[in-house]
Length: 479
Ligand code: 4AD
Ligand code: MG
Image 1 (spheres, rainbow, N blue to C red):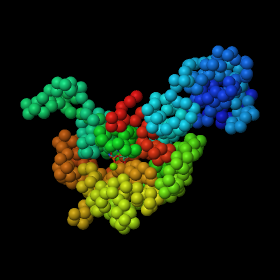
Image 2 (tube, helix red, strand yellow):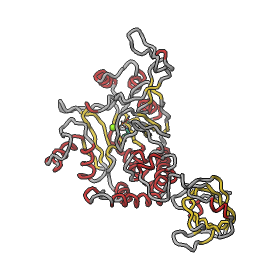
Image 3 (tube, helix red, strand yellow):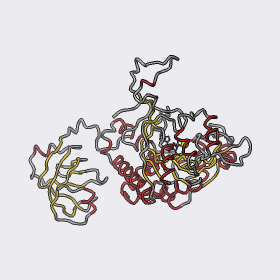
Image 4 (cartoon, rainbow, N blue to C red):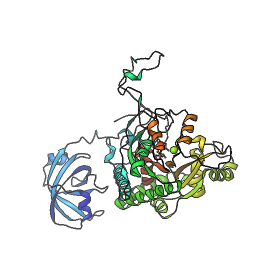
């Protein structure tokens, strides 16, 4: 029976015989194997009794080889571990030519590791990142399930543009070299697989809304796709999104739910994997040391996470946010690259100023100008003419910027139809969405959490490409 290394290191028990299997990280003095099986970022020291194994076998114990070792767990004499395994037998499960193996037992740059993403799982950093990613997935389900939310699988192939932003990947089986055309010269999608044009979904929200009109509380957790040509440390072409949708909720309850969810999952991940958090905390501190003093983050990773857990998020309106920016020394000294005035879509430099310089904690910004937000957001009543707003909310997090985007939805049929006409969203094709407003409409609200941005926040990883196993970005679809 194979035992996992995390279990062995956790136990205080000694003097029992077991088998471990894993990948060799290092092999020192022809005697000490550091073995890792991915259950923890700590290695188990496997001691090869000198002369007990034949020479040919010892040669095959190389960095990255896969081995099985059977022997006795004993209290360790050496530093750095409480127990170790004295091996009676060692079996090589998979040989590896250490000379050709791209991962050497030394520090590699994250850029280099991205090029060998098929192997980077075997490093300490990525071991910690992906165990935490897993804990966050489970923590999110746990949070919603404990509150009786229903998990809905929204479709991945969709014929509508949920965000109305037109940044979609087409899905087709048509031969691109011989596209069938209609009489007016446009592509004849009637001949396509679905008999109409189809795309990869940008969001499961619209379908979640339909389900919320029956189950009251639902959430989706699925892949979403955006064909935006954004080469930043926060954008992916394929990312995972969590989208709760709750009937009867208004904007304030929506913000309360988002704040409670973030705190819950951060705490869950920290409790589940304290060693991984500690490892990444030290890694980040090391990285920060390389930066000039004025660019260093104010908080360490653990400090930051604890601070978020123990403090209320700041809540301000968009109008208040703009006023803060206009009053800021940064604005007065013309430090912002982009102009600030009511009506702008805040740039990341503005969001960072609010979160990192002004409030120094997560900020929930509500009630954005209607013209910069999606068609489905609820139009606020009693706005000053020329300053129409919608019941939107974005949550901005230190070091990340927008981590959550959400809103109360327009539940009034007439207002929704009118807004869709204004924004050239086809109302006829989207009869199904409008039907919920025809048949028993009610106030409701929801939001979308970008899952990779959450993983970035919890792990302190600076680049979103390093928190998803195989990132898809413009000009890159390797592995
Ligand atoms: O703000 P967004 O576009 O909102 C929606 O899609 C709504 N339908 C959500 C809802 O109300 N149900 O996206 C939501 C979140 C963003 O706040 C961000 O965290 C993340 O998704 N996101 C991305 N993450 C990685 N790469 C991208 N290209 C992203 N675009 C958005
Ligand atoms: Mg958004």
